[in-house]
Image (cartoon, rainbow, N blue to C red; front, side):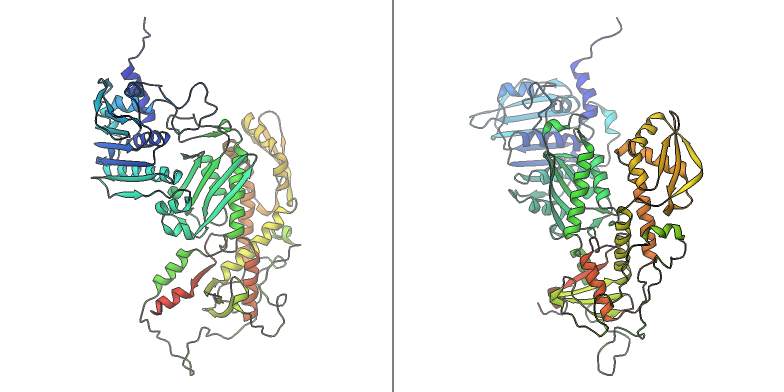
Length: 607
């Protein structure tokens, strides 16, 4: 007989390879157990990046001596019984403690609430010692020493102590954001102490503890629901961004997850507002019936599968875009902070003052504004066919005729969010006075956004013009990719891409969007097929069209160096106030920064 049953220790070590990948994985499992036990205070201590020591102490419900014997057995749990369709706890698999005990030196000391004595059990490399009485506070203390000493090969794959300690810190932060009513303390010889006091129901206060107070000032609250799926949390302003996606947090029924579909939805929601290579800051919390989401995808429980992924993606994208439309045009406080840091006390300009003793903002004479490129006079590099879709669209021109009479009109700053124009600096920046400060606007970036929003409205309002191919392009591809494309054929035709089935393993392309001109048709079709297979959406073509519109808007907007009259500057400000997304240009850069009067007074020592 060549088939035999593996020993319990070896089985646990195999399971530990998936459940306990690094010290941070063990920390996550132990913190989840503490939260499930009803703890309101959790203290974590580490040494050697968690490899030498990882201790998690809580004030939860605790365990009886008999419970300790079962706690270190595989697939023993108090959290579920007969079904996986109603999981309301963080843990449920019953694998974490036996997996840790099989590869490390594990001790569990616990005292049940109301009990007069505690108990302790020790497991070393899979060898279990009998339960014995022990002094313990109400709750449970789990101590893990010499992680992976029983499987030395795994130690070679761990990173430096500093990197492993940072990974544990990230786990604690995610748990702390998810459960603001719990006090977390993280300490140890390999780190400085991190203490996160409980904030109760004030979720934003806890997020500010983790992400910094800047997030509180630059966050927009989310509250949306669709078909019994609720989305809460906060989305950062588009101008409040970071260099990586580490500041994006997602939670499903209170469980921290790192789901690629949610991250993709965040990226899609911030499209056209985020600079290339930058990432938004967001904290999203999804609440839905546990039967509608599968959390038993991977032993680490960081991935989930939704029964209706399209619904969840649409909810996230729609809610964030609506929030940005509602409040996203305000300037981030970090922009004002950067401006303040740029000022130097005692600075003296080298130019000469005017005879009146003041300093001039404008040195060149006024020239009436003429738009350098409009749909009627295309910018260089774009064919008339590409512009035709916008022929009936009235573009913003920043001319004052449609907003004010020819004579100068003095506007009061208190009447408008972006205030009233007072000067133009270096023929590119509009200085506007508001009720309680001033705003500096990049005229080219602002007008570029206005033109693009008008173009995008034209794109979404009708079927886009297409150009027929003299000979249809036949694209060979797997049958399942052809099936996926044909499901979205009607939507693609609205964007100017007409496709037909050409046998079981090919697609015939008869028309392509006129805006794209000459293009790699097979490459486009295959990209769309890959996107549909990955995300069940075909947004790639729409993104390409919007990219062309954004480029055309850039060429057709008010150029830097163009002198504007006061009426024209005010007209531009009023259009910005009426246009969603005007706080950022098409490339994601801010179109204006705001400086409060209190900040200006502080520069001069008046506050």
